[in-house]
Figure 1: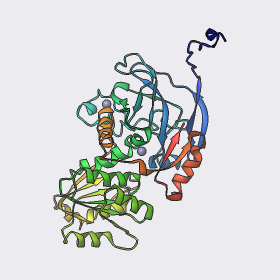
Figure 2 (figure 1 turned 90 degrees about the vertical axis):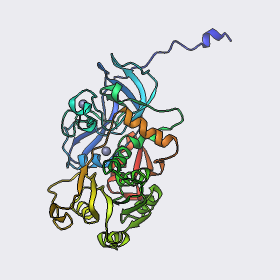
Figure 3 (figure 1 turned 60 degrees about the vertical axis):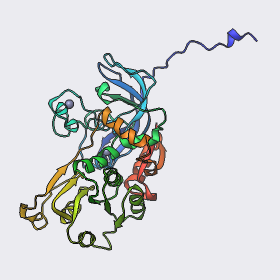
Figure 4 (figure 1 turned 30 degrees about the vertical axis):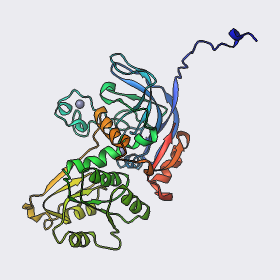
Length: 365
Ligand SMILES: [Zn+2]
Ligand SMILES: [Zn+2]
C-alpha cells in the first residue's frame, strides 16, 4: 500500500465555537448549557479545563445566599491545559499544563503591590472566577492577567494532586499562616469540612506541637487525624470549651482557627483562646456576628482576631505545589467522588446533602 496515501493530513486545530458549562440561572437553578467559547484578549489566556471541583461557596451561590448574576458560569478551582494565549502573554506555550488559583489578582493595583493579592482592586476583589467573571465548571476558561495567574504544573504531579491547591488548601493553610502558628503551639481548629481539614494540615505544616480538631461527623473526624489532628472532640458529646481548657491545663490554645462561619464556631474559638492568643477566622458569616465579652476579656485580653481570604496568584500556587511534590502535603484522600461535567448537577446534590461521606468531588469536563 502506498504510504503517502496514509500520511496524516496537516493538523487542523478544530476551533469549537461553543462549549459546555454549568450556568447559574438563578437561586436553586443551575444547568449544563451550551455557551459560546471564550476568546483570549490582551494579557489573557484560555485553558481547556481537565479537572475542577465544587466548593462550599458554590453551594451558597446555588442557594441564593451569595448573589451572582444569572447567566454566570460558576466554579473557581481549575486545572487545565493552555489552549490559547492572548497578545502580550510571554513565557508560556499552548499545550502546557497549568493550575490557576481561585483568586486571580491583577498584580498591578495598589492592593496587589502592597501584598494584599486577595483584595485586588478592593474588598474581595481578587475573587473573580464564578463571582464577577465566568468560572471553571466548564470545558474552557478565560484566565485574566495570565502571566500573574498561570502556574505551570511540574511533570511529576498529577491533576488530582494539585486541584485542591487552587482554593481549599491555599485558604486552609493560610489560616495557620495568618494566625502565625509557631513551633510547638497548641492549635484548635473548629469544623473539619474541606477547608477546616486543610487548616489542620496547615497547623501541622507550620510546626504546631498539639492540634485539636472539633467535629462531629465520623468521616471528617477520621480525615482530621489523617491531616494532622492529635485529637478530635465531638462537640455533640463533649463541651469543646471545657475539654480544651482541661487539655491545656486551664490556659487555652495559642491559636484557634474558625473554619465554618457561624456564631457558635466563632464563639467556640474565642472561648478556648489563651490570653494574648490569635483567633484566625476563615468562615464566611451571614447576618450578624457578635463578640461575647467574657472570653474576650472585655477587650483587655491582648487577643488578635485575623481573617483570611484564599491567597492566589502563580507564586502561591508554585509554593503549594512544592509541598505536594516533596511529600509534605497529600490532598488526594479528600477527593472522595468523581463526576463528569455532564452530570455535575447530581454532584451538587450529593455535595450539598453531604451524602456518602463526601468531602470533595472531582469534576472532569
Ligand atoms: Zn471556594
Ligand atoms: Zn490587583
